[in-house]
Amino acid sequence: MNTTLIKRIVALGEEDEDIRAIILEGSFTADFQVDELSDYDINIFSSNYEKYLIQDGWMARIGEVLLYQKEHLEFYDTFIPTRLVLLRDRERVDFSFWKPELLDDIIRGEKVYASYKNGYQILVDKDQLACQLKPPDGSGFVITFPSCTEFLQTIYDFWFEAYCVARYLSRKDLWFAKRIENSYIKDHLYQMALWHHQANNDWRADPLLHIEGKRFERWASAELIESISKCFSMYEIDGTWKSLFAMLDLFQGLAHQTALELQIEYPEQVERDMLSYLEYLKNR
Figure (spheres, rainbow, N blue to C red):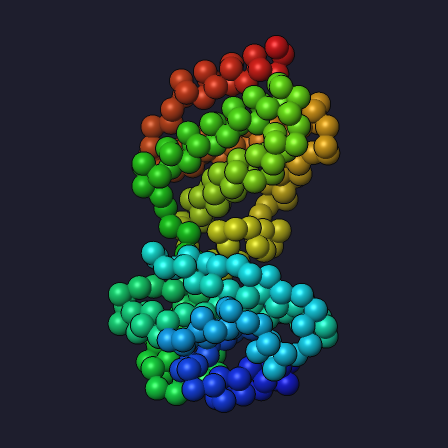
């Protein structure tokens, strides 16, 4: 950990009256692999954080800025603004800006912030509020078994996105087909891979699992990785047809086995009809 960087962040919080608390979360505070590319996830709690969004001069108090990105994350029904900052010394700091009321909600258990369950470090706590957080127990981002509705909806969504890929490939609209193939449909494929993995491991908590795919190669079997490798292709129509049908193959296997574990009736007829339609689009 870069202690000089942390001291600058603490100084920012202590010097600015509007900042009431700063909490470090993420890989530096959890049981994850840390290396020179690990970033610092900094939560700033301030009732008047808008000034940090309007102007960016405050970033220079942390270090010399090379580049930064304006983003946001969602927390329940609230949009949390963020500034993802890359410094010239190659450190990266992801700042998120929260109202203190949200920290109070987390403390009282009205809202759950999964990241804090894996680990956190309080850097500034002017109102002795952050110190009331529950200690981390390693149970953040637990992949639990889905409801029947959620499971079936993922299957239907996967097949609909598969149809969209095939539709645009059939029209030779390759850019848009690749856009869907490399985002939406793979989200559903990865979700099913997570459920399949957890179903085979009694749904035990595993800190390596991440809903967006981080650390995938650290928990996935060699067989799964080999199958996944066939689901990516170059910018060409024939290759994309092959990668699409490789995804169909893999998804079917994962979904059928997981449905058995969950004792959910699999929509066999939908699968057969969709496969037939996709073959038609490929050969038209």
